[in-house]
Length: 289
Image (cartoon, rainbow, N blue to C red; front, side):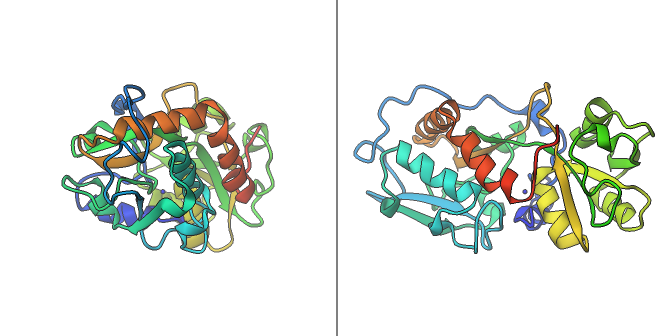
């Protein structure tokens, strides 16, 4: 989702007719219910994992910041690396009992056996994908994000009010466009683009002051597609149903309930929020007021 790994993944998934997390298309509206209870026995002694005594977590290669750091999930740095170890701890695994597997994105979301117990790879939960794989409860609520280029009049904006005089744009029919009209409410009618690529080109050509994309796409676009790209900030979470990223497991995995319960616990006790602040908000994606 990302200078993240999101865009390569997007390309891979496009071939499968599935939108990647880097370009969500209102998938939250069709998100399936994810397992949140029913885990009866979740411990290393009781769970049947890919390798006995080890919890194997998958992710892509390279694994991009801010979800991982230095392409090394084992260092525990970056949001998803930290979440992976937090889930493992909830399940009773010490850091030394965790193994990371490099798995291409398209192999993660397609049907079949998996060479991991669960995968963290900025995969948005959707009904379409849930036909092929299981999802845990969501471990990250995707936010909409305003991006621009250095020197833009909105580059230093700290609030949505400061964005209202700007000319903004987004891909048509997306939650990003809805976020502009319902949350920012700019003075000028937003520009609409058929694709995010067109929106980025318009930003490069200064046809708009900024565009709105989801956070994973923002990290990718500002570092890989834009010269002097700037993340202005994340919009507050919308009141409407939020798109979420979830851990991916093999279809009908016996571990799905356990992983969901671990994620639910981490959300309830504030751990996910703390990690989000540490690895996303403070790493160049501030929250707009």
